[in-house]
Image 1 (tube, chains in turn blue, green):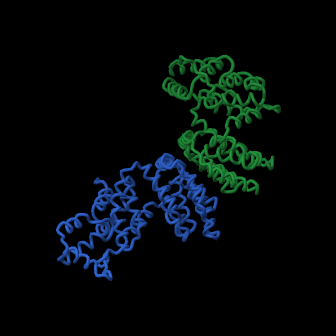
Image 2: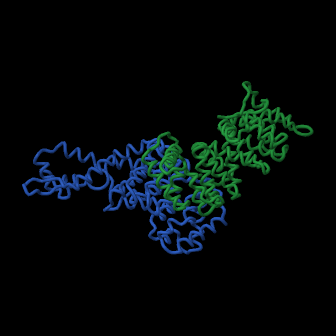
Image 3: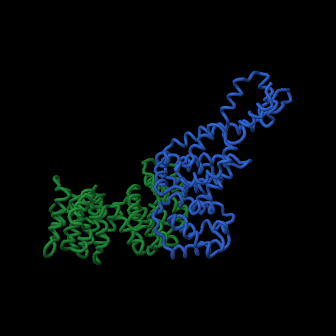
Length: 307
Length: 315
C-alpha cells in the first residue's frame, strides 16, 4: 500500500513545470501491483474510475504530461543549437503557428542584437531555402504584415548617438498616430512602422522618454489593445518589463502551454544579462513550480555570475 | 566578368603608396601615374595601398586625392579607389538626400548580391552612425518609401531553386495589380522586394508566357510616371542588370550632352563586377563599342581613367 505521502509525492512530481525524475524513479522502483493501485486510486487528477471497474489514466493528463516530459529534451536541443539556428527555427515555428504566436516573432526580432538577427536570417536561408522576409510576407495576411516583415528585416545602427530633436518629433508623430483613432490602423501607420522598425534602440528609448513627457502616459499605456505594437515597444524600449511579464505568465498557477514554452525560449537565450536580472526576482516561484532536470538547467543557466 | 586589368606582377602596397606620393609631390600632379596604379588594382589591393599610404605618410589616400584632383577625374578616382561596400554606402548617402537620384538606391539594393548589400549596410553604420534603412525611410514617403525601404532591407535568398506553381500564382497577382494600375499595391511590392532573384526570373518568365507581353511593357502605361520608371528599373536590375546598366550608359552618352555623374557611377561600380557583359550589351544595342562612345564624349584624364577601367586602350 502506498502511503498518503507517497501519493502526494507522485502527484507533486507531475504537477508544475517539468517533472521530478528522481521522485518518480524512487516511487517506481519499490512499487508492486497493490502499491501502484493505491497510487492510481489516490491521484484523482491523473486517474479516474472507469465504468468497468479499473482505474484509467486521464487522457488530458497524458497530454499535458507529454508536454512536461518533452520540456527537458527541448531545452537541451535548443540550448546546444547555434544561436542563429535556434532563432531561425523559433521564427519559423511561430510563423507557421499563426497570429497566436506572432509575439515570438516580435520577441526575437526586437531583443536580438543587429548581428544576431542578421545571423538568424542567414540560418533561415540554410534551413528553409527562402528568406524569412519572403516567407513571412507571403504567409501573414492581416494588418500585422507590414510591422512583422519590417521588424525581421531590420539592421539597426547600434551606436549610442541619439538626436534629441528627432526623438521629440518622432514621439509627437507616434502620439498623433495613436490619438488619431482606429487602433487597428495604428499598426499599419507608415510613420509608426518607420520609426519602430528602422530607428536604433538607444534612439527609441529616447523617443519613449519624450513620449511620456508630451502624453503624460507611456506609449505602452496609450497603445491599450494593440498587443503586437505594445510588445514591440516593450521589447525595444523596456525589455526588462517584457521579460518580467513572460516569467510571470509562465510561473503562474494556471499557466497555459504557450506561456510555459516561453521559459524554455528564455533559458536558451541565456547570454542576455537582462533576462538573468529578471530571473533573479522569480527565484522563489521557480523553486516552487519547476521540477527535476529541467529546473536544474533553468536555475543553472539563469543564475547570475558570482561577482 | 570584370574589365579591370591587373598586371601579373604587382608591386607591393608600400611601393605603390610611394609612387602615389611621388605623383602628388612637387608642382602639379602626375595623373597618368595615378591612373596607371589605381585603375589596375583590385579592391583588396587598393585597400592595402590605402593602409600602406596611411602608415607611411600619416594621411588618408582618399583625402590626398581629393586635394590634388578636380572635377570628374577626381570623382571617378575617389569612387573607384574606395572599397566597394564603402563606395555604395557613400553613393547611397548621396541618394537619400536627393530624391532625383532614388534610382541609385534601387541600383544598390537590386544589382548587388545579398551579401554585398549586407556589407554596404555595415559600412553605412560605420561611416554615418545611422542605418541605411532609417535614412531611406526618413527621406522618402508614400509609394517610394513603400518600395525603397523593403528593397534596401531585404536579405534575399540566393539559391537557384524556383517553385513553378508559385511563379504561376505570383505572375497572376502581378498581372492583376498592374491591370488595375495598382502599382503601389502591397502584394506587388511584396513579390518584387522579397522573392529571390531565381524565383523572380521564373515568375516573370511565366508572366511573359501567360499574358503575352513582358512585365516591363505593361508597366509603361504612363511614360512620365517616375514611380513606374523606378519599378521597371528595379525589375530590370533584378533580372538582367547588364541591360539596365547598358541603358544608363546609353542615356549618359546620348546626343544631348554627357551625364558624367551616371557614367562615372556605372563604370566605377561595375568595372570589377560585370562590365564585360555590359560592354557586350552596349555593342549589341548601339552597334558601336563602348570605348569609342566614351572616347567620343569625354576627354583628358577623365577619359583615360574611364577607358582604363573598362579595359580599353593601352594597359
